[in-house]
Image 1 (tube, rainbow, N blue to C red):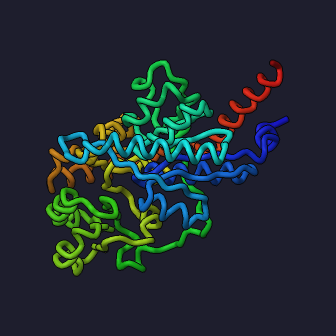
Image 2 (cartoon, rainbow, N blue to C red):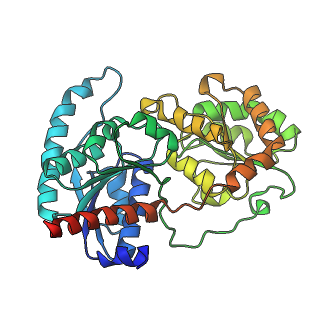
Length: 375
């Protein structure tokens, strides 16, 4: 019997997924849920009430159980005084939800929202599985890994930070797109298909550091024939669009639903180094100059970028070293070495992370059921 038949044989199981805080934790959870549903299982979610996860997950039609938990700030912050209170109350809320749902297993995708979900699963002795999307694992994953049957990872470098834990590197699950991606040509946004395009994005809110460096690099870039698709983010759009929107070869915007289509037009990208961004870059076989967000928890973006650079898929540029000159020089270097980057990217296998996770989790649960039947 093949693997797919084995999976479907366990049909009708109920799973609870804990996620929230950022898209890097939410979107992989959606991808896992989609795969479980494809195999005939049910998925519901626990996340922060009023958070991004509630908006996204209810829009997807998933049952959602809201809790109220806050992140633990790394620097001195009065809000940390309330952290134990919110953690305790949200853990009790998770216990109540899990007792009601009676899931076959709980799957968490890291981040502070996963904390009380994972703790409640451990208290109830429910099978617990984690996915860690960053190269350097966050506090929640590190503390709860010992209660997890398997910790799935997005990067190979995570293994050295989680000793004595059963690990399985699968990559980062990407949700399936129900709609066909639009095809857009450079000419439609005022660019020339015969000249190289640089995609710049610092996230939906944008990055002042990246935007400032791009503005300083613009004369050198355009002089060498580069064109720019530039997502400034909401906070920087008014300032930078007023100065640069009329320059030939520059397409500037705050945010666009076509951003994923722009990946396909670019020769090189300049981005932050969040796990989901890196996954999108890899999926689109797009070499990138990665500028990690220095304030990211546990400095995880730096480790993400470091691993991508080690694999020859990207170039790391620290924000402390970022300027117009360093950005332009790095882009020119990547342009000159573009073929080597493409060859390395072409060796990356297709993203089957969601399928691989579902297969392994269901196989693990099957083994437990089989062993229980023997006793």
